[in-house]
Image (tube, rainbow, N blue to C red; front, side):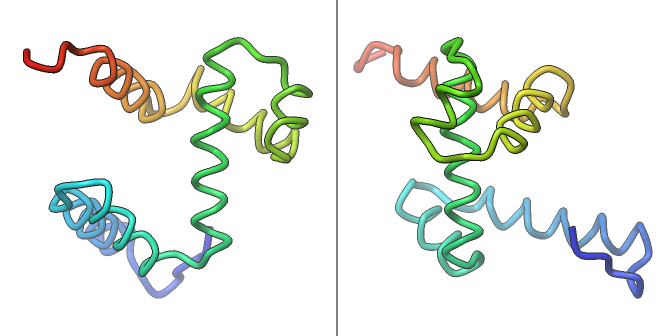
Amino acid sequence: MKDHRNLSPRQQALAERALFDALLTLQSAEECRAFLRDLCTPAELQALADRWAVVGLLKAGLPYREIHKQTGVSLTTIGRVARCLLDGDGGYQLASERLHEKQHRPEHA
């Protein structure tokens, strides 16, 4: 992560909150895609997508080496994602659970 020595912890927290608030204004996958394509380099966006793909494969119980073979994601990154799933802030788990619920919800409920 880039070190912003000129920003206080409070300023950094406010900058992050502004980003999170911007993300929360997006109302569709298409809007989110447009925002992230503007915000991230292609490599950054690919890294985010790769990590999200790893979440699903880890939750499905695939071994690290199989995930690496399927995705090309490094074993180090797979390990980091796994650690976040087990002992992170809970974001991967929350998003994964909500997406699962959404995908398994009856269409007219």
